[in-house]
Image (cartoon, rainbow, N blue to C red):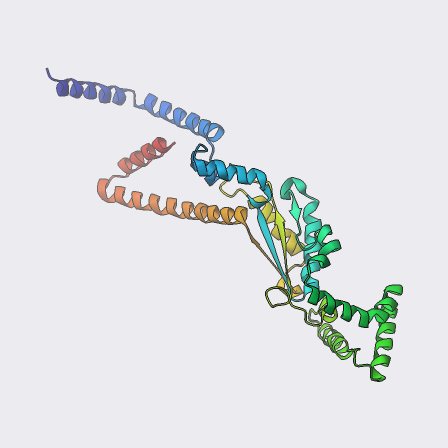
Length: 319
């Protein structure tokens, strides 16, 4: 008796035993599947940190880890890009949003506002070119009497008193006083708001008289760097922080209708969006695969009982 004959007899014996104990086999299979499902849910997890796919013993991984430890602010972050219709709107939006996020350190971690950093606000002029500093000094010197009056009375009455003084000087032929741009800007804002439209007067734009940033454009963009709490057991590690951040922007009316646009980028945000697209695609792929398998089984087996048995076996096998 050869090996194939022994295997055939064992197979016949096994199948005959299963047939005689069909109900017991089904019950055991269901219990094993349910128990296996619970075990998988409690003990098997996913790690969506793609850097852990490679061995930490690799040389470039060691260097990357050392770089991350030395400069932790450059890894796993969200960069909030705030664009304002005017520099003032961008500045105010960044300041308000940063203050809001700092109230939830357990979710957003460290919130860094480069342009609003206290050190640069106190010492920023030290980094300007000498020519720009001279130009700014001349502009401030010309406006000093009016700024002094407004500083002593920073109210609406003080504002109009300052404007009255400036108009008087302009009527005397003082060419250094350019009051017309201020009055034109105030007029445009008043007319827009009278029509129910959003409008904001940019004092920065008026004081700097069209000063440009390094890019040659007005500095109407602010950046916030955030290191949120990440959940690498989820397919979307930064989803909670991103959802809260977007909700805060909506609640604070930081939207194009109010002259502000808020967008998210950065390594954590990009990874979350990538995995989100994968997660959405997985659901669609699973449905299409199941439908195609069902169609093939129906066409091939032409028996409802066999199709149900095959699908049940497939599901149990996957679990």
